Image (cartoon, rainbow, N blue to C red; front, side, top):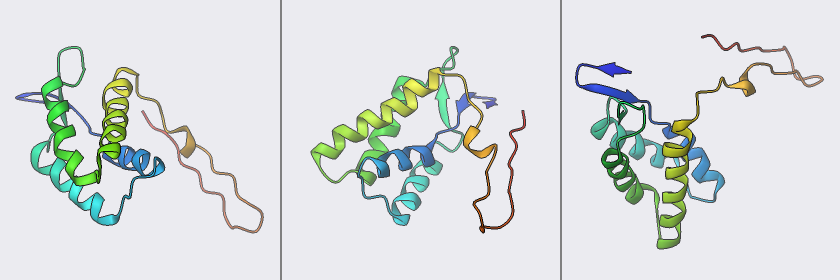
Length: 122
C-alpha cells in the first residue's frame, strides 16, 4: 500500500498469533484484542518499508518491542517470540506473496453436507 508519506506492508498479526499459539504461547481472545489495539494505534497503515520493499528496521524493532509485553510471560517466551516475529516479519517479507492454496478446494467428507469452494482472485 502506498500513501502520501510512504509505502507500507500489511502486518500479518493473525498469522503471528497462530504461530505463537502453535508454539505453546497462551493466546486468548483478550490477546487478540490487545495486539490489534497496539497495531491499530501505532501502525494503522501497516509496517513501513524501504525502497526495496523491506520492513524498516527501526519500525520492525518498535513493533516487536510493543507486542512483546502483550504476549510474553517469561524470558524463555521472549526469545521464542523474537525468533517467531523475525521469521514472519523479515524472512517471509522477502518471499513473493503466495495464494492461499489451502482455501482453493475443500472436499466434502461423507455425510458432512455441501461442497464449498473458494477461489483466489488476482
